[in-house]
Image (cartoon, rainbow, N blue to C red; front, side, top):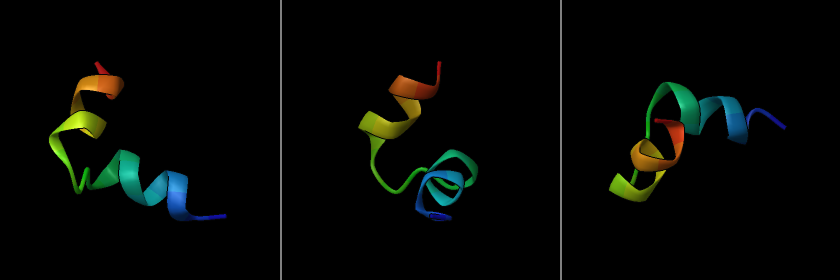
Length: 21
């Protein structure tokens, strides 16, 4: 699923960006 890659490349929600750090 490209959904994961999509979130990593373009975090839709701030929570995603925090998880990446």
